[in-house]
Length: 390
Image (cartoon, rainbow, N blue to C red; front, side):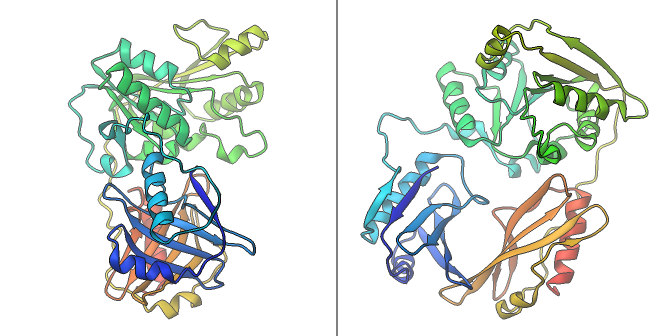
């Protein structure tokens, strides 16, 4: 990701920059002073830059929670910051490429685009963790009358796919740079024909991070039309055995297992594994039911605000509840004394969300956007309000 490593400087000069430059909104300082945030409005997106103050250098990079997909956009903001306050650069990777065309924004989708899910396509397929995008691109070219939603947490892979979509002239792909386990909950019931999970990261040492789980399969069955399929493809013996256990844990389910089945398009990694005589497993689950739409009418607003001095009284340890948790992390005070920010993680144990709670004198809101609209997140939100006494 883009970064600037610069010689230590007086960060209060950023306050003057915020007053005269519309690109920079405010600076916020952690209580211990080792980390600062700079709130940015690029004209396209609003996000935070992280400033880590170390003894011999300061590291500036895009803050992970609010990070945007377009790397060139982040680079432009950081280059403008460097030039505006004459930072002494030790090293960086923010050089701009005139050859790189801007990423076509109409194919990029955020969670907010799924709040009111609207598409003219009657057919929909989802691919979770599309990697190089070879299978997704093939499906999109083959099934032109179907919308293909590609979900990928790895930002460079998402960027590469966006470029390929543009080069191939495709208009039936949406690209989402987000956790698929959460995004699935935003999709309407009985809306998809297929969900592909091809060669997910095995996470043998951290199985709680695996895409396939009982909640994910249950959610997939809701999202799929009757007769629609969830297809897992893996070269990992451990993942295959694990998936068999997950699928077999359901009281009623139909799935089939295939080994070394040929498919129309393979990734370069699968080709390599085949050359190494590794087994490739296919597990296909078929949806049998027609499900009701789920309730998403949840209000994630805050009716009043708090005094920023009170945020230090909020517990720092994770608070566990029945099926969910709340954890308040770092706290930041705006240098203009107009408010503060609190990092907050919450929700289900296996698919949590992390947001900033932005607090001003008159209002509070989640940043960069409201949580996923599900019951678990809403329970956590109500508990957050209770803990903040709002």
